[in-house]
Image (cartoon, rainbow, N blue to C red; front, side, top):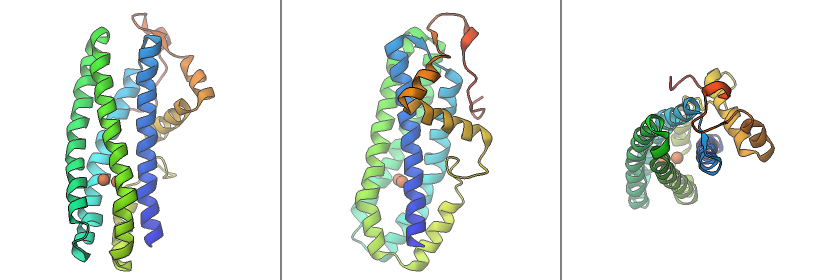
Length: 215
Ligand SMILES: [Fe+2]
Ligand SMILES: [Fe+2]
């Protein structure tokens, strides 16, 4: 059960990293090519980054993984305090994503820089956070948690239903992830770029985004 729970947590990290990489790619493309971004796709991504890590992944870590580890040892207390502070800062960075994306959509000429800064802050923060969990927290957990602890943790994370890895995931999320994975691939990036348009031109060629969640 230890391996199963560990793999679920790390799989969720991989999903989050893929979404963050896709978001960064979209922002870089917009800046490089002076294209109007697919705002519906950007809103779907930010919605996911709000819903999945902030409302499912991090709270499950707090309530199960961190809590059980604090029950078993004091050796992780300082690390857990640092990770919990990062969970809190992640919420603030997601709020900045929402705010700067709305401002960007309202004023394309002036909004990209602030949104780009917000994306980089969120991305740097969550990538550093997940790396710390995998390099420091999970090894401590593997030493101190019991088999029953891991069963409980695995059951909690099994309810999350990470849309990238669950066969019956919501179709909108499945489409979102497929699109982001394609964006991360150079050849697919070229294909995806066929639907983009220059900033300020009519909306005739905007591709239909996969996500409906942010509508
Ligand atoms: Fe975390
Ligand atoms: Fe995590």
